[in-house]
Image 1 (cartoon, rainbow, N blue to C red):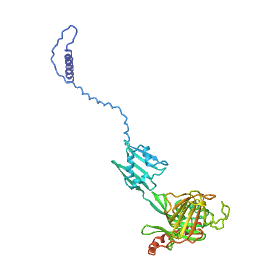
Image 2 (image 1 turned 45 degrees about the vertical axis):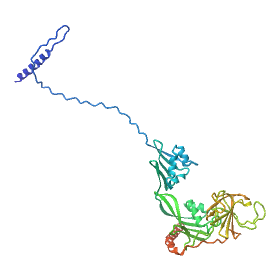
Image 3 (image 1 turned 180 degrees about the vertical axis):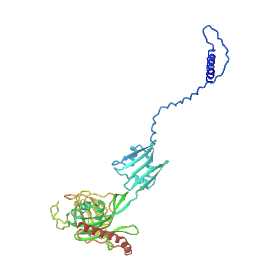
Image 4 (image 1 turned 90 degrees about the vertical axis):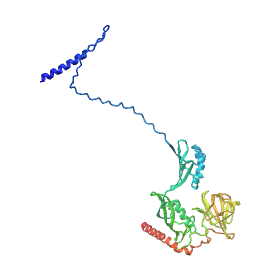
Length: 436
């Protein structure tokens, strides 16, 4: 059987070769002849080949180019003397855009008051148009102008302020300012405390080594970080053995003032001194020898030595009745307070701008600055106090007092102030015990 299969396979293979050999061969000069051969189909048991897998040729990688930025942001540090108009011109921004922002609303007008050293953030589109303007006024408020078509929306964003009660106590060894700083108080709290007790204590004359104070006040925080000090809530000052206590009270109309625990106003009709933290260089003396003229000449006021340019304040509400030069007094301001009282401020270096004869001034308002105009050997303020035209010693004259709190407000006054006074007493007692 095997020989029969082998013979059949061999005969099929021979026939295939004969069929192939039957094709005519072309040779030069020989005619093409075709020999017909009988065709037979022979099945070969040959496995089919698998088609080859063709791998696609990878395309070369192309580096992607970054798209151009749609906006440009500039953080411009404001220089001294710069305003928005100058900055817009420097950054090639449209003046009409500035006009639109400033006149959008009342908040827009605040963009006109920018401060040197702060950052103005400017965001522009590819065509140079302003789309966003941001100015951080302070730690609390930020001004933002945003383009809406051809117009702008201007808003003020304010951060939430947390109020925290704090306290401090100190013994005076050098000055209220220096010892207050050692106790951790800010300049603002120290000056506010001086203002509260200014009607009873002359901080240039009356302070003594060993005087002490306790103060309860507010701190302002944003995100847990202290940004400023708030108002004094209550304070106690011991001066030459005498204790003065003041507590804050806010009435239903929102008016804030300071009172003694029994409701008497801390504010008197007159301040004791027109210059903060100044040193008395010459007292009231009707037989004093003048340092320049070198002869006996009554000194009808008090001289406060201070640096040139130190602010001079009106000691009470009144009207300016003289403002100019007056002989040896140099530059002088005289303020009339009602019918009976007047005060004089001399040797000023310059006057406060915006005031003139007839201007109304409030107690504590600046009216000029310390200098040495006229007959003066050094920078100081000469201050006089007159009642019905008669000179009185500003350091000893009995000053009129302000009216006490309205009796109708006493119940509300007690409700507000009792907890504050209790806290003040606890703090004072605790601090005294810890120091001992």
